[in-house]
Every structure is written in structure tokens, then in C-alpha cells.
Amino acid sequence: MKWGKKDGRLPVKSWCEDVEQGAMAQVDSLAEHPALDFHVALMPDCHQGYGMPIGGVVASESVVIPGAVGVDIGCGMRAFQLPLQASKLSTGDLEQWCELVRDTVPVGFSSLERPAIWHGFDEAIDGCEIAKRRVQKAKTQLGTLGGGNHFIELQEDENGDAWIMVHSGSRNTGLQIAKHYNDLAKELCATWHAGIPNDDLAFLPRDSDEGRSYLMEMDWALSYAKENRRRIMRQAIGAVEEITGRMLCNEDASEYSATDVHHNYAAMENHFGKNVMVHRKGATSARRGQVGIIPGSMGTSSYIVKGLGNRDSFTSCSHGAGRNMGRKQASRTLTTEEANGAMTGIVFDGYGTDRKGNPDFGEAPQAYKDIDQVMEAQSDLVEIVHKLRPLAVVKG
Image (cartoon, rainbow, N blue to C red; front, top):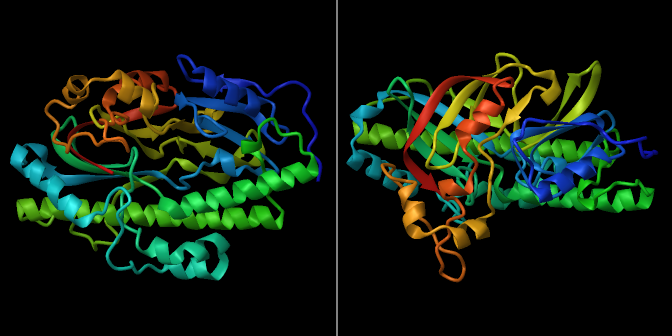
């Protein structure tokens, strides 16, 4: 195994108006990575992450990079269009919906009172070392929201139809898988003197035992994250059904029609005539005609889109609006009046506090980029199918 430094740097293809200094330093490391191919693609929601910018897409013919997938493996979106006009729901109904959702979906660090049953747990026991260690904890987190920027929203589209949108991932199990294999990759790359520009971009050869093990566990985490969102969505639909007294999901509860997309994962795809491992960290697939979901902040619009199959983006698009300030900066900068004002007309539980008891405005709309500008910047990546405005929001 040998990865030599390439002559020169990989080109960078960007859909960003500008890139913050911290993210740009990470872009420089990607461009100098010895095992990446073609170019680095930056989506318009790009901002600094761990090791690699969120909103970044890269490809490799020979390796997988755990840090280029991220710590919340399989984090993504699920959206469901209800057969219901949003105007049928009063402000009181929206407030009740939030209460019912919180009664049935644990948020933040909360877990289920009883372990969940799911066939995927047998797969974890059979072949996934880290997931196997975490399986008992994972059983108490399947169908839970988590914290941070994860959310459940009731929304209205341009036709007046109601929608539900869920943002969640693989919970702590995905984090532990990511951490284990990223640490392993760092050790191996140091042994090989691999010449990586940043330890957080350490890699595993795809055809090695370690690479195959990571990909198996990553795929399991993707399935777990998708099932997590499905269960949350079922509860959120059920809350609307209880309020309206109507059955709104006529199919079997486990098989209703919904759009579901990951935005932290790696997958084998064919680009520029080669089969390569495409890493999307805070980016989603946007093949021609593929339906996708691009949320804004909790106070701004979200979008249902169709991909345009742009080759230069590795057929990708943004995963959301992207942050324009960090959580601590938002809390230092914004006032309560400003943060609350951005949520006028939207039912939500208010902002939480940090460990010192100070207001936490890290999820205030002002902490995010303008979603409409982000959408305009990627007009050659996706076409808009629906624009959704938030009516009620449940946060972790």
C-alpha cells in the first residue's frame, strides 16, 4: 500500500458565495490529500466542521475516510405530505401537536422506557463490532430525536397542504462507530507514513479488513438512522391523527410513502468513468430526477427538490441552509427579543439554556445562512418542487 503526494493540488469547485477562514483551511487539506480523486466540491451551505467542511463532497477510488463521513453517520431528513389542508389546524391544534409529539418522542438525552424491537439489531450482532457493543443502548434510542439541530416540524406548502419533516440520525451509536474507525485510521496512517495533510482525514483502504469493517458498520448505521426517522415520523403523524380524529396514513404504519435522504455517508458511485467512493458530509445525493429535502432553519422555509444530476458536484446538493455563526457566537450576539422575533407566528417551545443557565440561541434562525440565497446558488444542482413554511417546531 502506497499513497504518494500528488503533483499540485486538486481543483476546488464551489457553489459558495464565500467560505469562512476555518472551512477554507480544511478545503486546503482536502485539496492536498494524497488519496482523493478529481476535485473537491463545496455546496452553498458549506461551513467548518471536524476535519472536513460540512457541505463538502469528495471521491476516492481506493480509500474510505471516516472523518469525511462525519460523526453522526446517516443523519438525514424524512418528509411526508399529509392529506390535510394546514388551514384545518388552529394555533391550539399546533400547540397540542407539539405536546403530543414530546409525549411520544424522547428528545435530547432522553431514551425510551422500553427497548425497541427491530430486525436490524440481529444484523448488528452478526457482523458489526462497535454496533454490537452498543446494541442495548441503541435499542433504547431507536425512535428518539436527539438534540442540537435535530427537529420535527409541521409545515405548509404553497398549495396549503400540510407536511411533516424530521431531521435525526444514528444517535450515539453512529458517533461511536465514527470515533472508533477514525482513531484506527489515524493509527494506521501514522504507521504507513501516508502523508495526509490532516489527521482528521485519515483513511482506510477499501479492500482492507479495516475498510470493509467500517463500511459494514456505516451501512448498519445508515439503516438504523432511517428506521429512527421512520418511527419518529409515525409518532408525529399519529399526533395529527389524534387531533383531527382522521386516519391520515392509510397504508401499513411501517410502509407509508415518504421521502428519506441521508446527508452524512459514503457510497460507491460511477463518476467521470471511474467507480469511486463518494463521501458526502452535510450534502445529499441529487441525481437527475431524484427527490430530495433541503431544510432551512426552524424559522425559515424548507424545500422539496429534484436533482439535476450535475456532474461537477458529484451529483450532490446542499443538506440545508448551513451555519453562518457558531452556537456560542449566536448566544453572545443575539438578544432574546431578536431570537424570539425570528419565530413570530411559529409555535415552538422557546430556547433552552446552556450549562451555566444562560439563553442558548445556537438554533435561532439568525445563526443560519439565508436559505433562499442558498437555493439560488444551487439552481444548477436542483429544481424546486415545493416550498414549505414552518407552522410548529419540536427541537431536541
